[in-house]
Amino acid sequence: MPFDLETAAHPERLRRVAIDPVSRVEGHGKVTLLLDEAGRVQQARLHIVEFRGFEQFIVGRPYWEVPVMVQRLCGICPVSHHLAASKALDAVVGVTGRGGAHPLPASATAMRRLMHYGQVMQSHALHFFHLASPDLLFGFDSEPQRRHIVGVAEAHPEIARQGVLLRQYGQEVIRATAGKRIHGTGSVPGGVNRLLSDDDHALLKGQAAERIAWAEGAVALAARLHESEPALYRHFGEVPAMMLSLVRPGDGAMELYDGVLRVRHADGSLLLDGHSDQRYLDLIEEEVRPWSYMKFPYLRALGPERGWYRVGPLARVQNCSHIPTPRAEAARQAFVAAAGGAVAHGALSTHWARMIELLYAMEVIAELLDEPALRAGELTASAPRQGGPGGDSEGEREGIASIEAPCGTLIHHYRVGRDELVTHCNLIVSTTHNNQAMNEAVRAVARHYFDGRALTEGLLNRIEVAIRAYDPCLSCATHALGRMPLDVQLSAADGRPLDRLLRDGDGRCTR
Image (tube, rainbow, N blue to C red):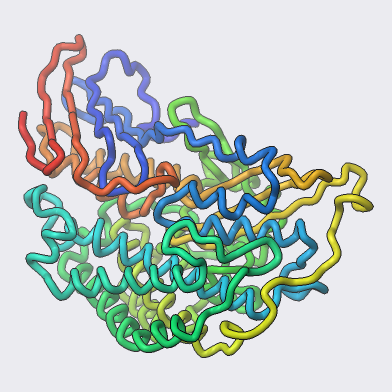
């Protein structure tokens, strides 16, 4: 596709700069820039260089294994995959969606929702305090040796303490509902396998008010950062894009566990609303490009060039009609007012939106802890199987579900054969939705900061800052904390080395 700066006319004549790997993100990716002899950027790409293959090796496995297996996609948000798979496979065991004849028991719904909002909270706290705050608090050109959570703890001990404990609270919610902080087993097709214990309820309830206050403080911190440098925070990595997310059916309120799809144009006008995730294939198409293992989704009706979009906190906060909790809604209104009613598209605005969602998640957790269904009730639904023996002619059953993972909309789609084995799997994960938007952000930063300038660690860090704002799960597997080595080489058009910048594991840079 003819996207500006995606493909240079004569790459063999250009100098190549590589950022490999991109650090302080999950997984392994690299950025390549091709520069002409004047040092002007002619091509900029974010490459995802890992091949996971989950959609293939899940095929042939018993369907009941899938909610546990797919958690290995991601070391940071395994709960999102765990729940998306469970929701999709509910249909395989005959459990119907909202308003159906055989709904999920109230206790199972409450436990899953509590698990999910705990996941959102811990992931947002991890991203903002551990990964992004060093850049935001110290500056993009600050000493690399300070840009980590320990540096934040030394300079801003109370901010770091609250950030760590906010994440810990989210992890405790996950442990209490899923059995473990990472890769738990609490959700199963058709329900859950546990209720909340009295001890865990007392633990979480006792800390909830303090964590809400800290979450409000995190929103205030993000707002102050924007107020300190409004032009930078509004325009850095700014990429006008359509916005896609789930919203609550009926009133369009923010809803992260279960809803309908809504899409807004980049100018904020509504393009589509109330679209069922069961018909996602009518809405979304995926394009493959030869230089990346990650696909490029787009709205089928608009085509690849005009149909790409953004998901995640910045899209969700501006796509919903309101947030159904008082503190987060007040924060959302302040966010909208700060932009003067315009739609915010700057990469750094995502951090403010993310903290609004952190507050929302904490308010929802506090509300859920008042539900008696968390501690008493049926674990699983009893429902007649759909399809299978006596079902359709192929004996095949199908399940589709979506959920709002911390970094964006997540879709799971399975088919299960008569023998209970998975025959088809299609996953569109959050970072995949954001692929074009992230590439455009890299190009916006490269175009603004790199043209004709000498390489510095601070310039390279700006590229990574733009990518980090999307909180990408590049591998959806393990987390790469930002102390990774970096080797950038600048070569002349004839291949002659001109410059080389090395960053070692402790952040020191040498030429």
